[in-house]
Each structure stands twice: as structure tokens, then as C-alpha cells.
Image (cartoon, rainbow over all chains, first blue to last red; front, side, top):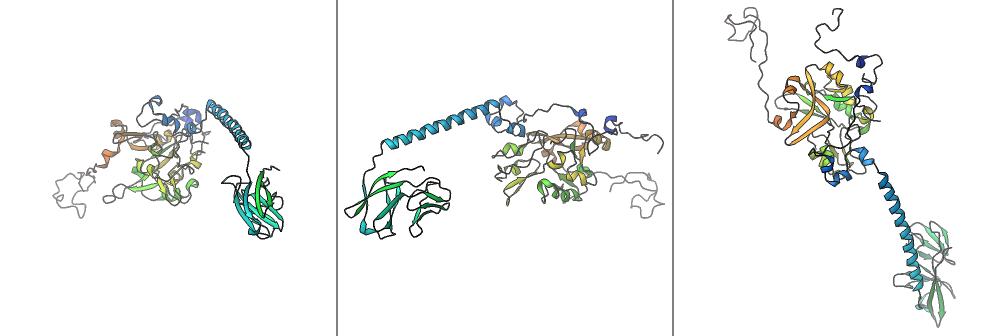
Length: 215
Length: 232
């Protein structure tokens, strides 16, 4: 080669900014400032029509990541307000429901079993006060009976009385209740089981009321 | 991090020698370790050994994303169409059917679509994707437009493709002879599918009959131009 390295070379001269010693990038690239261009982030639809002419689902399901991730401040505020409104309304709804329940609550007496039907340590399942409120009656000793709602206060699984251990066991999440008081002693439940008041007379056991307890 | 604006992918199928280096390198990519996302296809295996590497072209109008019912295929702001989002992809295979270039793959055991994402872990920090880093003939090239103009003065990059009624503009460029791009700055792929290669006359410079042993019969009368073109 002669002293001119480009002699006879048909290729155009390189932009000095590209080959300069301070060039950037691992691939031997030009500085970023060389390539300033604004990119339209809007996905070009296959029919090449403008975004306004596109169906609404294109705005809801954009292909571009920045648009997909973008949350408008107005949308976020809407979400906040509506969610808090829903929660507040829910609270009032629950309170109203409870009030109605309490108001109409006059649980009558119901005969559960005859005294002779269950031995000491025996159990009877019954429904009280409604048709779908399962409860369990346990004979602790000759003249001592306890009855609780069978719905675990954690997630309403059915508790299983274990009179020989003196506990009620909830198999769903290994919750334990004291058989004598109905209070939680182990596992996730925090509140005691609702207690069913009993009345033993004339050789039969009657349920007379429900005691809802929170502590 | 995003792929720098000034770096582009250029495919030059003419230069592909079918060495499979890109396929092997692709399996090393950290975004899809062990799986090769590149397709090294024979153009017409019966007729020729010519291969062409097919990577994701990163369309401006990604058909795979258009047809995705789960909204799983997203394109980042740098124009790179990413593999399906794992929590969203239902492995229905719509994208596999829809992609005009045949790029996405559904991996049934993992229930996920995977595709070439231009080695996003590398390209997003300015490194060459694995295939471009290893390609010995630089059929796969990743760099600036200035570089490619320097390296391939006879070719021009195009990024418009016609598939029937669908026109697709891509982020990845294909190098085509300048003469062709001057006539039509896009590739009509569907039309080219039926096109047969023209039988081309390959010219060989022949020595006079007396000096070369074993000259073809018909050229041995001595009256021929020693530099005549001979059809083979």
C-alpha cells in the first residue's frame, strides 16, 4: 500500500466522529448525541390509521411497554376514591347486617337430646339457632354439658370435639379450643367459639340461647 | 437500560455459511439459557446449501403482539419486541402462527412462548447479541449504520417487507444489493417465494486450446477467443 491508505478505495470517508479515539460503546460506536431523534411511542397499527381511528381495545391493551405500564394520575385517583368508597360502604353494610340480625334474634328453645342418649364423653351434633348453624354438644361429666357453635372462628371449618384431651380441634389449620370455656388455645383462631346456653330438665337437654363472644 | 438508538442489527444472508455458530452461541444467552432462539434455515435444501439465519425482526407493527389474546407480548421503548411475559402467556401458539418470519416458539413443557429478544441483557448495555458476536462471516452484524456502510459498500439495508397485503417495517435490517434497493426499497416476500433462481452464466477465463490440457470439446478448434465466457 502507498502512503495514502484510501487510494483506490471506493468507500466513502468515515465520519470523524465515528472513528474518533473517544468513540463510545463496546461495538466502536458513535456518541449518542449523533443520533438524536424523537421516537413515537405509539404503536403503528397494521392498518396504518392514526390512534384516534383505532378501536378502543387498542388503548386498553397497548403493545408498547411504556404505555402498558403507564397509569394516569386521574385513573389512579379514581381507583383510590372508588376503592375507599367501596370499603366504607362495605363496613356500613356489615354493621347494618349485624344490627338486623341482632334485632330479629329471638332464638327459641330447642330440644337437643335426651339425657340418656349420650354417655359421659359423648357428643351430639345439632343445628341451633337456625337450620344451618351446626353446633356440637359434649357431655363432660355426669351432670355437666357444654355446647358450642361448630364453626371455627378462624375460617369456619367444622371443629371436632376431643373430650379425652379436653379440646376442640379444627383440622383445617390446626386450631385448638378449650373444651370447658371454648376459648382458643392454639393455632390461628383468635376469638372463642359462640357458646350455646343449655337447660337440662325433665331428662332432656334444651338449647336456650347463643352467647356471641369476641374475647 | 435500553438498547442504544444508534445500534442496529443487520442481517446479510448472502454471507451466511451455515456454520451453526450463531445457533450454538444463542443457547448461551442468559435470557433463555440452553434454548436456541435463532433459526438457521436452508433456502432450498434440494437445490442449494445456502442457509439464512432468521432472528426476530422486531417489527414496528408486531403481528405476534397483535394476535396475542393474553396481552403477553410487549415491546419496550427501544423497539425490542420481548418474549412473552411469563405470568400472562397461555402458550396458545397464536404468535407462532401469525409471525410472518416464523420466529416465536412455544415451549409446551414450560407453557411459555419464547423468541429472540436481541439478547436483551447484552443489547441493552450496548454489547453485541450473542449471534452477532460469534458470526465468523458477519452475516449477522450489530453496529452503527456508518459501520455497515463502510463494511458493505455494495449493499444497502432495507427494513420493509411485503407479505401479501401486509407491509411490515422492522427494526432489524436486511442487506440487499444496492441495485435492487434502488428499484424497490422493500422485499416482496410472498412474491419471492415462487421465484426460481435464474440460471446464471458463470464466466471462467479459458486459456487457448493448445496450452491447456483437457479443454472441453468444441473449444479445441483454436479459433475461439481465449477469454470467451463458457457456460457451465
